[in-house]
Length: 198
Length: 198
DNA sequence: TGTACATCAGTGAACGCGCGTTCACTGATGTAC
DNA sequence: TGTACATCAGTGAACGCGCGTTCACTGATGTAC
Image 1 (tube, chains in turn purple, green, yellow, brown):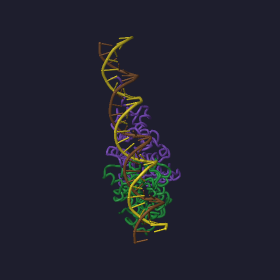
Image 2 (image 1 turned 135 degrees about the vertical axis):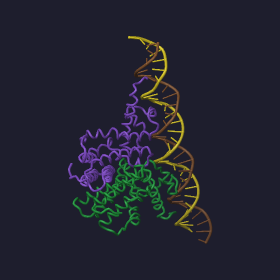
Image 3 (image 1 turned 60 degrees about the vertical axis):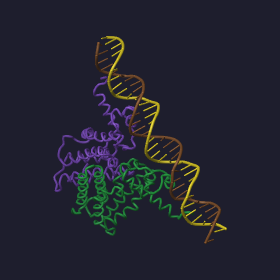
Image 4 (image 1 turned 30 degrees about the horizontal axis):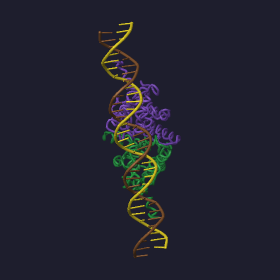
């Protein structure tokens, strides 16, 4: 065995990381395999040693988000040991933040890829769904008590957060984008029973 | 003048209509000029008699939505003469309806195209923004009175409606899609001060 | 320890196809007389 | 009214490029002895 066993696995992760950034920024069709491999410091020919098709790479890149990004987020934006309403509020704050809006590469894939995914195959949709369920689950378990069922409120809150960011990204005017983000933010906080605050 | 003056204009509209349907369903990259022209009953060669580039067609197809679809919607879904809270509620009902979810061809372009647009040029973003402002304007002018500013509430409501549909379209499971749509719906109604009802 | 070898991660040329775009041409139409 | 003509909407072959995919090869590495 000429190379250490973990070598191939590490390279694979590196390719996936490049893919995640590029797909998130530019979408499925606009990213070439050459782009992905070059960002990983390799040449295009080796790609098929790691993945069978471009679509497989795409699905795995989305899935990778659920395993690596949440931790990065937690340490960057909020205390992972928090539980209950505080945690949910921190997620909302981080999700609808200016930093998250600006982070084209590392942002939540639900923001940059929904239309690509809606037209993609089952694998891709399943990966997308996994990300959504992670978010909804975090909300559902940590929302303050209220009249409506927790799951219903969690789903609506996810729609509001993702929708606000999707629209903000799609308009060209930074002022309107900021308005959208802030409107979604304060509405998310107040409708979940929190006072308005950063 | 061998052909009647309005002939070219009619053909142009027909091409735009085909483009709107196809782009809405499949996105920018996945639609070929040949597809569009074939759906309009023409061959690809003639395309450049009407548009300079594919991107120009894309932007105009989005814009066309603001001029032709709203009327179709109004007659199909609600009384266009309504004003005030009733109108806003009817828009929400129609937007988050099962019919709208199923209508891949004719649905609001904000649902199917956000990620394409976010990566597109200025023209495309301006066209997208026009659609958004139409929706926000309709909400802003017709929401029931409440504490928060009408514009802020209108923006958040738009984010909730679009976000709910975007997520519903992106997941493969019809049950989850229905949950998302209904959660967004009841949340939109209740947070705008209406009772839950169809 | 040093050397020959087998393995396999990575290379880069090449293939084939699809699509945006161009262009010379056709033929249906309204007009001039 | 009938006929020759000019116009221009629409055709379809062709071009060129980019990209996904394939494949024969290279060369760095760990192993056997």
